[in-house]
Image (cartoon, rainbow, N blue to C red; front, side, top):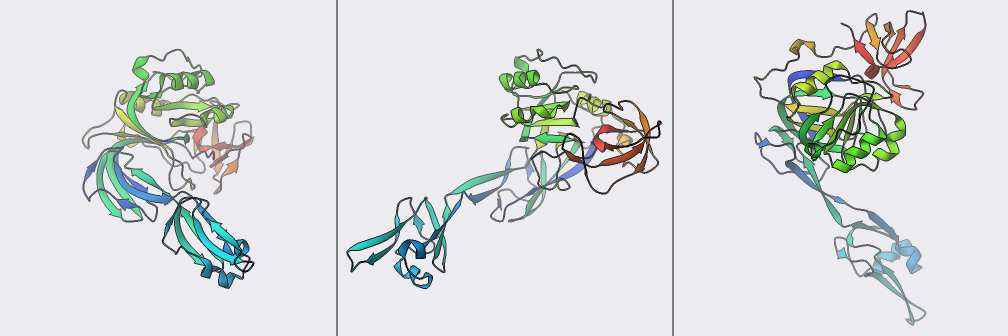
Length: 358
């Protein structure tokens, strides 16, 4: 699944709450007001690996209403692969029809000639994702973690959650990516570059074994290679060949060398969660960024600068804000604005490729 998100929201210092949603069987393993680290397990759940439905009536050659009478195991019983579940004698008792379990598991349902077997359960751990304290929890629903942090919500991400030391390679945005800058200090860290991700750079990151990777943008032809990467990757600006915006780069530079959370966890609903970089800070700590400079919502009539070719650097006027996402030539669906350019032409530009001009 590949989803792109609206323009990056950059907040220098704020109090954030993150909901860790639990499956129905999820049980919190922490207490209210308890401090947690990013990779602390806040809840566990046991999820079934698979299910198998056996048609007893067909295998035993009988009517559905009689099939259960031949069962030698009952609902709730644990069974092993190959174990006999039902036997029916035919041909005056000279032959036997048997039904065996195709997997290890537990019988969870039996009705109308069918048996449902639940496979062995797998343990699922839910992590805090950010350091902070537990402010709310509900069994089978959610756990809420609160923290003070700098927050960067970015355009696209893949690969789950990573917690590690930020190592920023660039001091200025650019379009040229040098893949020969890795050294042993980058191993086990979250590496950030202010230029587009390339195949050569990605292979270098895999070889040095980074914990996570942040880049400004990338070409969509890297997606097959990314599907095999074992660490999360985030794009601040999205797809294409676009340098990192200075606001994000400045914030990353301020906290270079600090531990950060790179949360690229996928959500089926882009409105529910989005890729983000969370940098925990103390409540009294301020950033070099102006706190009042948080990203504003775009509005009709506002001027904005386009950050992607073929209109890179041009300024236009927003004349409408479609409610729905629009499909780009790349095949991605993204929210954005319709802009009137100085030439009189009207174009659609994703929010992630627009710079707010105030």
